[in-house]
Amino acid sequence: MINQTIHDIFEQLGLGAHLAWDTLTSILKGKTKISLTLEQMLKIGYESLPLSLTSAAFVGMVFAVQVATEFVKFGAGKYVGGVMAIAMARELGPALVGVVIAARVAAAITAEIGTMKVTEQIDALQALGSNPIRYLVIPRFIACATMLPLLTISSDIIGFLGGYFVGTSVVRINPVEYMDNAQSLLVLWDVWGGLIKTIFFGMVIAIIASYKGLNTKGGAKGVGEATTSSVVTSLISLFVINYFLSIAFFK
Image 1 (cartoon, rainbow, N blue to C red):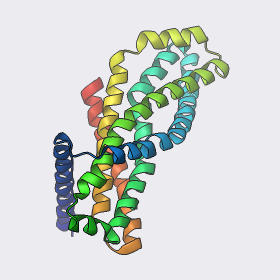
Image 2 (image 1 turned 45 degrees about the vertical axis):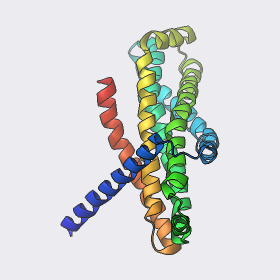
Image 3 (image 1 turned 135 degrees about the vertical axis):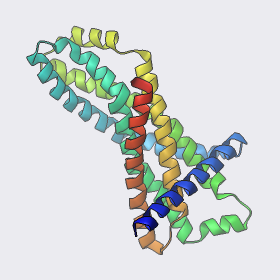
Image 4 (image 1 turned 90 degrees about the horizontal axis):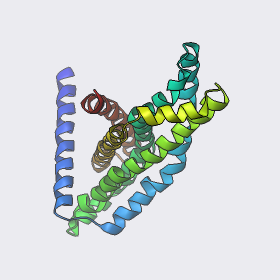
């Protein structure tokens, strides 16, 4: 039983890696449908904006409350702005956007492609000589990889401003000290490192969601199971990848 489970895990890893390779090579060969890609960028980026910004604002405010209260106790309230800026740029912003997209977009991608799979629409595409990867995977792959950094930038700003609002109005930190310390402690690589991480997050989410959709079986029940598996696998993968990227970029 255990051996079979391990075998299944490695088999899925191999098939997922093969899908990622086919996707990347197809992109490099210029096999991209621009109209479909723009449509997916709208769905993944613009339609996810309210959720990501709302989440970032409240996460920033909660983080500021916890950090500022303790820092003020030890007379280090002036450092709250810098800690807030670094935390949002390096971890909170990228991780939050990754989780939001994994929960919302991965489910949608898997459900859409999975429904096409069980209704034999993908088989019809192949019968007509069309490549499903070009029409289904590549547009979502590019959209996820490009829109996550843009969502992260806006989430970083909103989260930082949420922390500023709470820190200055609730904890009574000096607004000038908050902003000055943020400018002095935050370096450009903190922002770039966080954005680069989200590119990897987007690619992983798109590949996992597409793979789960393309391998859906069992009708409506199978679509539901594939969607659940896609979200869970994406979230776990993001947490694991985030750790190693954080070590590589910020150690």
